[in-house]
Length: 127
Image (cartoon, rainbow, N blue to C red):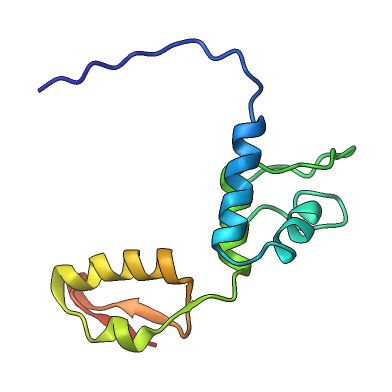
């Protein structure tokens, strides 16, 4: 079953208002409305830190917004205070464990303790 894919030229700015809106939404969703913008202001700056999601170079003469939409999302996920209980993840087995890891860590924040997917990715194991 073939999908009809239509590719059209895009003449708008890369990283325009749509990207700004998306970055704002992720900062709000991750509960970092104040810490997020302050952190992003320092991302990819000579006196700041490098992006956690890519190899975006620190420019010599940075502009105020030296990050991409995905970089903003990755940073928001790194700095959120939201936590997912690894105890909950450890109770799941098999396919449910793998699915739960992605859902819980994506929606509830970072793991509250180190963990690993066990043998054959069948179980979540605390480290």
